[in-house]
Amino acid sequence: MLTLMQDPEVYADDMETFNGVFTTFMQLIKLKNAKLFLHSHQVANYAVSVAAKMRLPREEIERIRLAALLHDVGHITVPNQVLAKVPYLSTREMSVFKNHCNAGSYMLENIPFCQELIPYIRFHHERFDGTGYPKRLKGVNIPLGARIIAVANHYDRFINPCTQNWVKTKDEAVSELLSLSGMAFDPEVVRAFIDALG
Image (tube, rainbow, N blue to C red; front, side, top):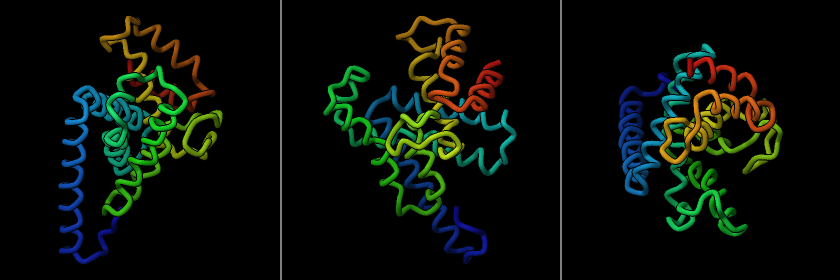
């Protein structure tokens, strides 16, 4: 993030730029897919709850919230016919889909206030066991914000009992998260997520 040691007028201009760009990106996500827009907000809500449960500093919780809202901004670059087929994709389609992590982070490269959000967006599909993408990072080499977003993203997209397409109880959803703990997800984050669910 930019520091307050900068010229106050420059800081205010940069903050105004960030707010305008952020709002535009959220509008583009909504235009791309209304469900994706809702998913982004739900993931942000879950991620904030987990970060608070883990007693992270307020500034870090805010970074995680913003990154969670933008975690799928790279989907703007993925053709609708590919998104409609997830998770039943061909090898070529899967390659196009997986690129959304890098695409989203590249969109933010030159935007003030976004530099610390980029790793969380780029690496939210990494797996704790090192079999994720795009860099096959493992364990604590995955930024904590990305590890938190990964759990929130998976829960909301695939096992949220409130999701219309899935008929799962809360207990089944929790059981599935626990089964993925240590493989796909950081066990500490999974525990905090389950505690946050209540």
